[in-house]
Image (cartoon, rainbow, N blue to C red):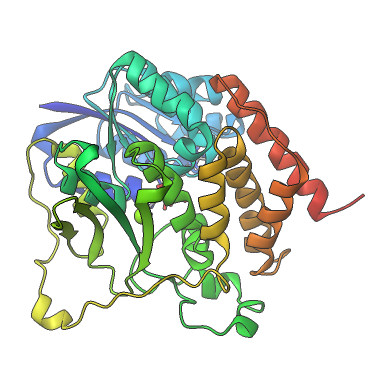
Length: 383
Ligand code: NAD
Ligand code: MG
């Protein structure tokens, strides 16, 4: 029997994780489940899985959560301190699946306790960078990547020395607008952007996939997880999303990880690591898929990957600013207040608007994130 906490249990990754737990109920004990504000859904999950504690980020939702959990022994909690406490709670695996930099503090709380963290929340690592990797080194925590590309790379590296690596290649589907002409992109709607051809995901990451900022964030994520330097890290577009990423070694061997476009595969890989577990995912039918194709990214139509590569090379607080500006711009786009092509343009403008210092602590990262958000809002809506 192993124990698990899921930060962001009501989201897309949370649901995929709980689906695997549901199929193996006798093997897992659920410790903490968290959500932003959907108390009803959180309470339903907490009851189903007999969680120890259920936490909503929004304190205004605590009465509703308490009400929905009445008659159970599940503790109901709310607020940022409670989220951090949920992250710190003893569990064999803590799944970090909150979207955005909002997940940073609870993820860092799990890391500080030396836990095994299954990391989906890429924005947390992008923002904190070395602050997070240093905390992992200090506490002896184990960071297992859940993002499908990074999980693929982790599997292809199989503990090999990075000195033997010639290239790490991240694959990108190219998103729903992969083949759209530049003129059409300016008029892309939120509904069109969230309709991903291969994956079903939360709204924010779906928009990031459409702008290619998702691959940009993943580039920075890979830069920290597998420190081979920007000169050995690259992106290739692979529309079928079957090859999830590749590692080329100095002898000319390239190892790739293939699988269906179903997040339950990388989640299962992280949950069972270093062993393996069953998933209900359909076996890979390559004859039915027929063709796997690859092409170079088009950074003219999709400048986000260039911005991210530059941010990774600049280091320090720059990736945190890129991430914060992107979160604000994506929210404005989803709200119908910003044109699709303005998302990356806004990120570039924010990056040009101030030179951040190098945050050395979690608190400094959080302060920089808040400052970059405020600055982005100012630039978007001049007084
Ligand atoms: P989602 O929007 O479906 O779910 C997000 C979860 O975080 C929900 O439980 C929500 O309640 C919670 N949350 C949102 N804002 C919060 C806040 N301010 N405070 C506390 N909790 C908050 O998102 P998702 O698609 O599941 O993605 C989660 C993370 O995993 C993201 O970082 C994303 O980039 C990453 N990821 C997702 C996929 C995927 O297929 N969905 C794949 C790879 C990586
Ligand atoms: Mg990914």
